Image 1 (cartoon, rainbow, N blue to C red):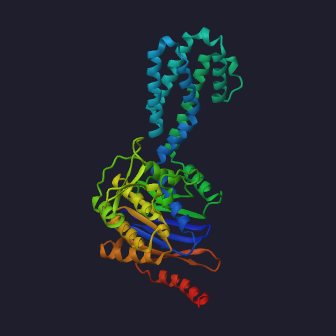
Image 2: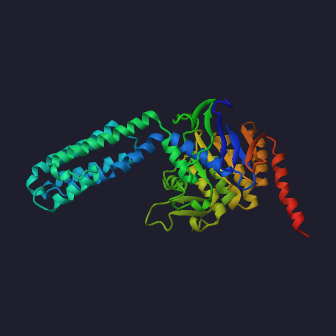
Image 3: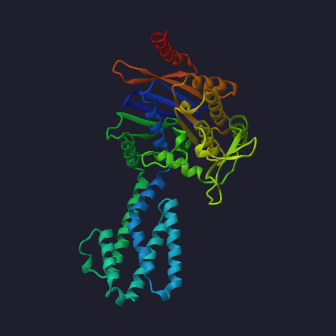
Length: 437
């Protein structure tokens, strides 16, 4: 089973990358100097698998955005119902909240479409009963304004309100029809848009292809996204400073914080969480969305049980805390791809080895796939030799980015041999010798 779910990424001629053919079947470590394209590879993999594995839900998010004006219309019309219809009004508002929640959490479905159409049909009948009121006051003007905005039609004033509700229903059905079509086709437009957004260019690689067991999941030539089996969720960690921070430009921060803020702990990975708590941090972490809690993110020291605000703790503590949260929540499993972009940046040299150990144990006990982008020799060495000790070295691959004559980088597969990586690090020692005493 060692190669049964092998992932292969091929990139050619994109940004600093001339050519990269990267295997993912356990732990993959890519190394190279700054500006060689390590982060590009990390982000490419993250968004390819994030979007392909969550495709229907992402289409649902777009659908809800398109339906937002319609939901506002429904909400306001319900609010404007006669006071003697208070019981029905409260029931309709409750149903609308449930519908809104389903649109936020579920992929598009005929059932949700029918619920929204029924809401609109019901409100159309109520307005017919209140026809005199709607033809005689300010409420009428605001309603027509909303219809004009939703339907993008300047001629709404020539129609009756029930007719306009029928037009809105027709538009809603059209929006759902488009969403269903996208789900059936699995068009790659979401991925293309995301890549253009994160890399700030509409220029895409000359080749970008991901395959699973030699079957192509995605290629720029196909315009479609396949459905991955071996990777169902993807997590991208590039800095511990993201903890508790939301960002418009770093969507992966928001995704991680959303996950961590769910305090439904399963703690099925106690072997690893106990190592982090007892051997590394000397404490444990928790999240409480409670006004009575002194801190949302808390760190509790084992020695004296004192509680600290985790957001004020050292970045090294935050680095391990993020893993601790994910492990306690049971988010990391054998269908997870964990991506670490320069994890050594905020770690004490001693903790670099501990962090590498935790990564190896996650792969060993949970079978999650891991991609590490690093230029730290201690991290490279720790992954290599701890993997060997834990008997998972067979599924570990090392790569080095080698600069070509055209100043672009070609990624060379080293298998288990890390010596070429250390030779590249010796350049720094040569410069110390050159500039030193």
